[in-house]
Each structure stands twice: as C-alpha cells, then as structure tokens.
Image (tube, rainbow, N blue to C red; front, side, top):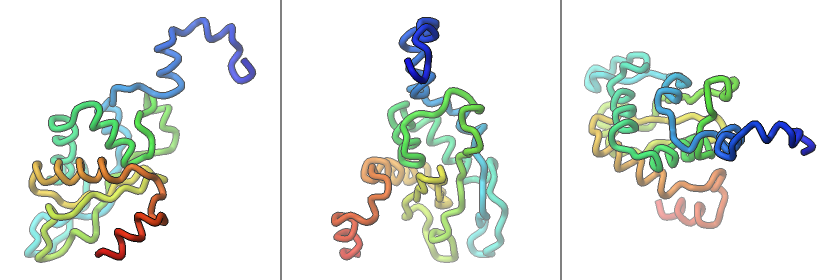
Length: 171
C-alpha cells in the first residue's frame, strides 16, 4: 500500500496484476523479434572467408528463429529467455524493455576455415541480454546445443564456483 495505493489494486484482476508485475508467462516471439538487434559478421562461404554483416536474413539467424518458433514450446522459450537474460519472462510490451535490446552477436570462436559451427554451444551474457550465436547450419544440432546449454547453465555468475573451477580443470 506504500508503493501502490491499495484502492488502485481493485481495478486489476489478479492475473492482470501478475502480468503487470512479472510479465506474461507466454513468450511473445514477435515482441522478442521486434526488440532484437544484430551485431557482427558471418561467413556465407567458409572457404572464401568473406564476411557479411549479420541480420535477420542471415542463414543462422533465420535458423535460430525457426528453432524458437517450431522446435520450442513455451517452457523452453522461457528457459531461453532465462539463459540469455536471467529472467524467465518478457516485459508486456516494447515500452517495458526501456533501452534494453536482445542482441544476437557473432560467436567468434566458431568462425574460421575448418571449424564446424554445429559443434559449438551458444554463449549468453545475461547482464547485457546478449547471445553469441554460432553460424549453425543444422537445425537439429542447433536445437540440441541450446537445450543442453539451457538445461545446464542455470546460474548467473556461476563462473567462480568450485564446480565451475573443477569443470575448467577437466578441459
């Protein structure tokens, strides 16, 4: 009653109030696309090593959106948002994002002649809502890598834990 006068609360149903405070449980893919920016370059022909600016028409970006739309259910989309942003829901509308944008960036370690991008995992930078996306060429491989990453990378800033150090020593 201090932040919001309790008389105002009666204008909302409990579901409306929950959406206003927490965001919608259903992930709005069109809103996410609208709030996405693209950074970096990709190599359409790895042999030529010619680079082209990433954008919504880049093959691996199109594959990413196809995966989100057709291979993921709403729970997995929510897990994706959590993996990339550290929260499981999107704001209600574009205004709720403020200055924050979902950035899909080039995954530099997966680039280069002789490298198979389908063997790399996506990398998330939750503080910035950024995703380093390998130049996947196979939808199934992409989906498997994302499911593994989303299932096994549940902690924000978990790099400096005993478990993380143990994993790093095994490499």
